[in-house]
Image (cartoon, rainbow, N blue to C red; front, side, top):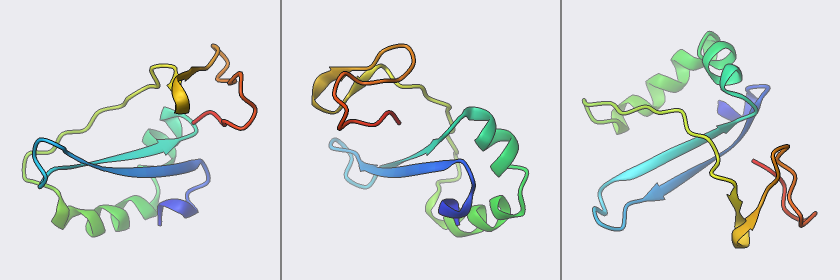
Length: 91
């Protein structure tokens, strides 16, 4: 479902080290507007929410995050998102 959204990039699921029953789902979009305006206003959003709802606790926590500038291997990206290492693509 997400992969069909035009500006969807990728996702990650991270498990908490301190609380093994807790997970974080990170969804990467080309821009915040692609998520908040494009995807959330599409019919696919309701279908996606129905799929993930059973896995969410009653107390929801949503946040829009930005990159801190550190990418794989501790390399820094410049302001345009370009890495000094051409094998690393900006997220």
